[in-house]
Every structure is written in structure tokens, then in C-alpha cells.
Amino acid sequence: MSTGTHYLQREESFMYDRETRFTMEETLNHARIEYTEKGVMHMASRRCTIIAISRSTAVLGILTQFKIPEQFCIDVPEARIDRIGCVLNRVNANNTVEARFLRLLSERDLNRIFVYSDHPAHRDHKLDLRA
Image (cartoon, rainbow, N blue to C red):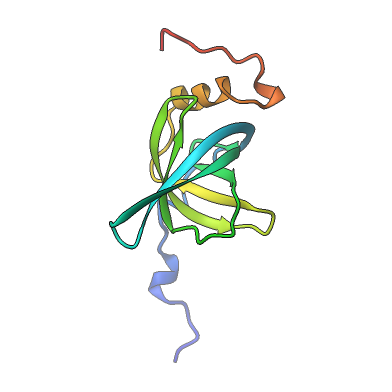
């Protein structure tokens, strides 16, 4: 085999290579992950806590004694945000999970999450009714 460069090494993916990185902001919201078990036969849900969030990713605090699926949905009932599609990025040893959203969160949804957050940094956030 040749040790030269291959033409595929120059390829880049827009989703992962050129995507803007959004800053993670600490928050503390109660949420629920929902996923299917055994194909489409059984729908399961688990409680979790959103520890940090950006427009494209979230860090969830969850008990990881059970198998976390590769794809799942997040519901934030307090903020009335339903079914945010996610892909599992990484499971950490300290019972946190990093998940990537299938679509970017809007600023309106992100602001609504911060309004209902229990984190002291978001104490002054107000809900904009005109938006």
C-alpha cells in the first residue's frame, strides 16, 4: 500500500467539521428521556436533569445503571418543550451523558428553558410573552 495521502482524507463534513460551536451554559432543569425498547414494542421513559445546554448539545444527569439507547427524545415539561430528538455522544463515569440534538434549539426554546431553570444564574430570566 502507498503511504501517500488518500483523496478521502481531504473530505470534510459540514455537520461536524465546519459547524459553529455553541457555548454550553449551566442550567438545572428537570427533564425526561423517552425511547423505544425491543424495536417498536415498548416505550420507556426515565427522569433526568439537564445540567448544561447549548443550541446543539446538552449534558444530562441520569442514573446510568440501565442501557441508554443511541437515539432518544428529551421532554422538558416545565418549559412545555416536547420531544427534542437526540443522539447519544458519550456516557461519562460520573452519571452524566452528553447528547447531541438532531436539530438546533431556537433561541425562544432556550430562553424558556432558562426561565424555568433552578440554577441561581438564571434567577433574573423573564418569559417574553410577545415572542
